[in-house]
Image (cartoon, rainbow, N blue to C red):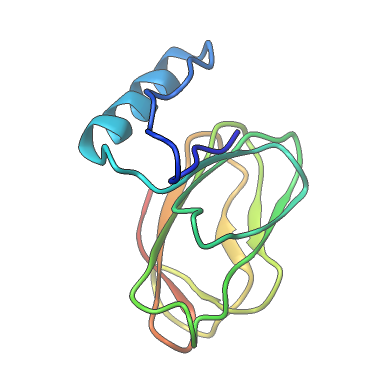
Length: 130
């Protein structure tokens, strides 16, 4: 499910999962001109220019191909899990919340995990997470 920035943004659809529905509504209310909530159910996703909030809902690992940090500009990508699935980058270009060398890990296999990734021109840095 993708909310297109070219069409008027309707409230997010109900998922049947009350905590998730509340989270999506709060997100919608805070950012009414949101340019892309994506509910990802596939094993891989190439992150598009309009993908700002990626919610992973898959029984298994989700591999994200993140944009090149050299050309991404001052962009934030928020990633969240609904299910207990691992989320990784297709390239070793993610620096964890505690710093260190870039790797592939984004989220551990725990439902409800989230991370905000910001490009510094060299890598994607996890600047906030739970």
